[in-house]
Image (cartoon, rainbow, N blue to C red):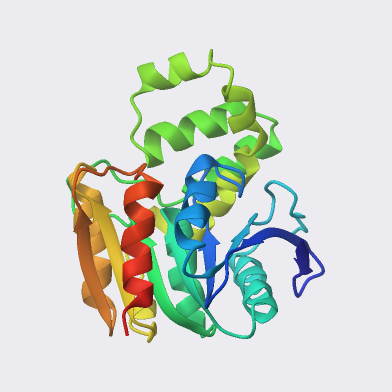
Length: 262
């Protein structure tokens, strides 16, 4: 199934389950077919009508240029309209950052859950370059898609360079290169230097839970707590035994519990 966004871009989605509408917003390297997102849809479908969509530039969705974060917000708005005019939203990683931006923009989001939006609020890790988006865009324009993936993995995700070198030889590296252009979009969504958008967060009126993993890097937990503190109606919850790649079997029920609560 698909909807048409405000700029004419086709946004593809899968719908499952019955009940109040929940929309899933992916982070980097993912589309709606990724096991984390099919797993989240399966975990939530017994309680909700779940819309699992491909963000623009991924899977079966279009990629009208020029890109802007506002166009991605319009994509989510189109799904919400199709779902009945309002919805609950779950976003993971940079998808969580996009969901927060959409809520701050005034989209009719009734409840919001995000997992580890990657904002950096202390000096416990190396900073992300302030012009990271422009650096990645330049590499894409030069056709250096593998270098984009490597830069994103080492500088944004803190994957050791030696591990990235090993990943380049793996059979799934080609798939990562295929979505390299969307990593520019991720950098745009999170913003310069992954800095906390403190003022915009104060505009998010929907009840929101910010979840982080017990085993994730400490900066992610601190960032999640800082997001929750800035939200007018936010709370922070730590999921035991989880890291940034949280299991849908743990994350799904936690999100469902929050969305079902009155």
